[in-house]
Length: 188
Length: 188
Length: 263
Image 1 (spheres, rainbow over the protein chains, first blue to last red):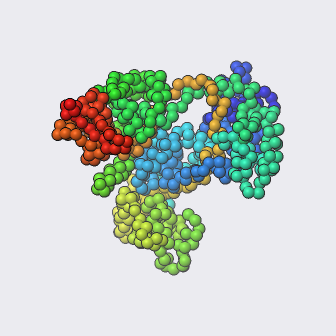
Image 2 (cartoon, rainbow over the protein chains, first blue to last red):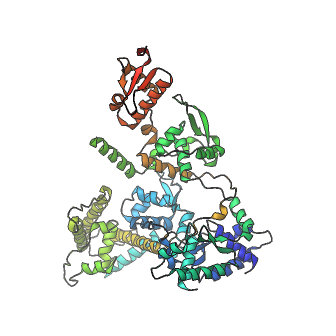
Image 3 (cartoon, each protein chain N blue to C red):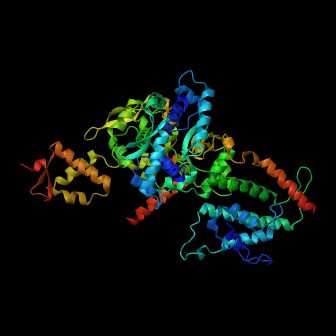
């Protein structure tokens, strides 16, 4: 194992957050290039892919995490079980993640139910969502979006990694789909 | 790498304290013997002896640590990371910001716990809070308020930019609190 | 939706009137969720739903007593949410009646507008997010499926920069305080309803008619704040030598005397 790789291994291990290549370059000596770092990261990723710990890319950086196959055992380290997310919390989070920036009114329109304040609060407390600003309409409602912690906690490198983000139909597409299909029905 | 060793690697990595063989045995399945665990630990220790991370024995248990040889880099990593404000420090600062001028006794009454002097000191050192004077009550306690640096660091034009306390709670939460307190009154 | 529930739904799939689903409102996330369940589980065409049948099933489900599983498990449906279910009920009934009429509504291009189009669009949009939410929930999550290192002994003795300001974190912290103390802090909790000074005056007043036992004095002091204020007032009066505090024996009654009445 070369010194650089060993050093990067130590730095990544000692960090409490994912580190970008850029951050690593700042911490390492000046002579170390981004491509050197990249090579070491690839070597480490490969080495750890078969172990109990994996080196993964998350929120634009690199972080060691336990393999999910061991989740059950690692959970036993702590007495408390990880909190379950309600379906309403997940639906609210999904709408915010895919439609950001979005307002509570939009979320409620999409889900067809009132969103309880405690759901928003829970998501905010976990730092999965945050207020990005206010929408310039009467009432100036908060605009919500996801925060960095959302990527970190959901094992995403970026928002582009959200599953099927590209296949999501927007309102116009749905309208079109509906009017086409209902027309077809009417012509039957 | 066998499953047991991989599993132990993950558990040791995620644990917030060094783990003894005994503790590992409790976490792992019943069939796993102390000597199995010992064998895995030896394999891990040997594997990591030449890497950027070492598996070492501390306080009677096993824990992963970064290799001393990389200490300089690990330090660089942390030296630039601002310390995080604890929940208690944030709560104390928030109460001072919203209720200024306020005394330590009031803060403690609201938080329901003693406020350590080091929290006040940290906030003062940061120039987020300052002593505005003394309250004209027995003991003449200090009256605290926020300083100019608080506005600067929290990106506020003036204290008026802090959202109304009632805005921080959602309508249903306020409803809940109101009904709780009227219930309490009725039961008296 | 699990298949067991769906199986229960159609004990007699061939019947014209399938028996009502053995499901309850509290299993759903709102009216759209209910409608999607009814539509998908019966393989209805979302673009061409039999609106009369759907309305009938929806209403039955709405009226279904919620206490089938446990006697006194009264569904405490949030009024807001119950309202959302009722709004959907009236929307469905309106659609049903509009379906019976000839279609006078035309779009820009002169095509007839299907009254159900809006509902179909709403259902499709919601269904997408319902699915995405499910996928999001199944993603490996930090702290549930994956774990990062949780302590960093290497950082223990390193001098680090002072903490940075984070308004969100600050507001969150204050929210916690508000919720803990139960609402508005500024006006309620410490609004100086009792000042030590006032209480000192009150104590002195009561002592003009002679000595008083501490128990007596505290007995008619309502609430913890008043108690604390009263005790503070006594201590302050004592310190200023306006009163004397006498306790003749260990654990015995504590007597308060005004200074004037001592000599």
